[in-house]
Length: 618
Image 1 (tube, helix red, strand yellow):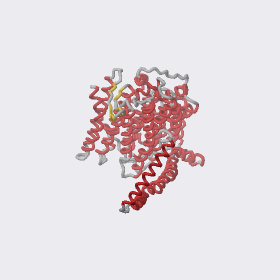
Image 2 (cartoon, rainbow, N blue to C red):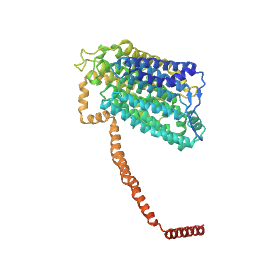
Image 3 (cartoon, rainbow, N blue to C red):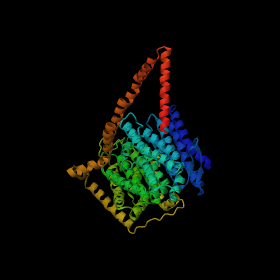
Image 4 (cartoon, rainbow, N blue to C red):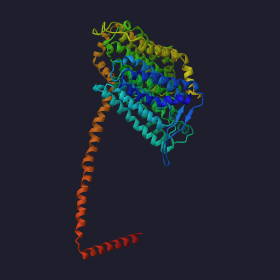
């Protein structure tokens, strides 16, 4: 059973991708059913691994490439952490495929879409099941390629094509550091086995300075994949892709990969002292994401900045030394964020692809079930008990208060509290009041019960029900490792009080009238703040300016000048140089024996002199 489950997980995604693409050439309905069936098999295989796991990791070793003394391993390693990630990737992936039946039903190129989705899920499966950094990097790159292809699925739209390319370039920049880390690990440790690397660190068998640099390089890759500061702009622009793609990226697969790789190498990061950097970068990223989400207009961009913020909160948990807090928040976030994105997809579907929340309103009358399900996801994101987000967020903040620096405490806590402001604002704008777009009034329709409402209902139920098993999830993820959970007196009351105050302010502002917000935003000082937050602190513009003015205008043009005026000149100069040598030697070819004998004597004399000089020098 276990071997069959592994075979399905590791082989079927790529076979399924080929089959889905090929079947789309005959009938546009076939690719969906290929993806639906194979996606269900993925989840079934993950469940089999979950129930078959006896506490002993599944450890399978292969050699991918062998050349002399060089061996590149490609092994499989399944433990509690891997199974947790598999259940998330395959379960949410299957729900996403099911939801796409209606959402992507009018797309003519079904084969291309579902082929990329299966390939994407396969990349995540490979990443979380491999035991070597080489295999993890292959899965890492598969997801990068698939994300580019899915974000730019509507490639005929300039914005989508540009967003896909941006995601590819931003994440590739981080991946360069992963390659550098692989090279350094081979040099300093001679192994890329993730389990062995943790043991090497635990036993102090690697220089701390070298280990610190390696850990930072790996974290740079995680920054790119998980949308942390400063490589987060791609995460927002990725919203140009289909909403089902956004749910996959932000809930089930890609953005979780950065957190997973840090969690998998947690002992290595802890020994080298790199967790301090993780905590500080993540705390800043959490604040940037939460504050920027407050002023966005598009539904998906609000959720995208929210993803950045909540992934950062999970990173903060890891950074302050709590593997349990970080991973628990990752699990909870994956579920309620998939619920929120698919709910947003249902809203966009109902509103004929209107994405601006300010142009909606009153949808609770048209789609009460969607409003209810999105409310469940919103309450979990905000951290309201008894929803799952409350428990993991409180655990992270408790760990921060117990072990974090003042910088991390302030920014992480503010970000956690701001969650209730931007998600309450979003829900009210969409569902409460009257429709603010007269063109939509009377033309909106409810989504189908089976294809769209059912996945939302399942995710909403899990979001609420999983709260019961938060402690069990922590123990399962830790896999027998002891970790002291900080208990901060009054923390729950403090967090709930803060959330209540913020919630009251948001609701009061909405009840007072949306015109009040417009008046506030028209104030010169508030207008500046609004623009800074709306543009994500202008980080994208800074990166673009640096890329154009330093990389392209300076470095690239300098390299081109050297290539044209130095390299090309040297290459082109070989022709006249060869002709000159030819003419020089041609002078001695007179056809006279006496001339040749004279040259021979001169040559022998030169050689004798050189030998005497060299002998004397020795």
